[in-house]
Length: 202
Image (cartoon, rainbow, N blue to C red):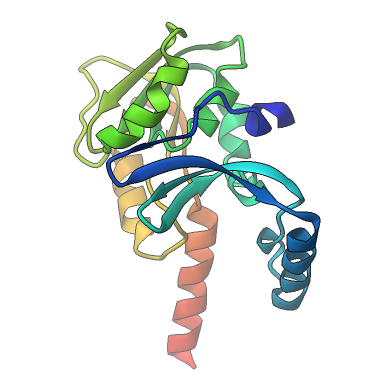
């Protein structure tokens, strides 16, 4: 499945303030990142040498196909089957990965930013299993009677305790109409909340 992440079908481009491009981690840069990861104890700091893709809005990197991003969506990719809903298109990395599975029969993707759709959607236009809808995930209402085998909520750019309320709201919305669901970074956000609460208690 590694090639699913390294060989993304999307093309570099720009739409509005959004940009999709390719960047390289050199051997020297990777060594620097490895030293930083060792100092901080955060293995997610390390990125092996190679070429990667990233989606940015202005100066802010929203998503990339680096190891941390891959690690945090593996559970969903393994569980995705049948009818699937994804909140957040991003680079199309997760969408591309689950489309390699023959047992995935239909994927609905909800994406708030039309510019992101402009950059990414064309790469999946020939796969009839894919439906991309321009809507806010927090406001979108699934059609009456529809059910999903798996739902994945990935509308956040970083790990923050403030994300948890939105995760709870989304998971509550889909609880009765999907067999399994998950939210990107929930475990990391919950850990941050615990750390914050411990600081307050001291």
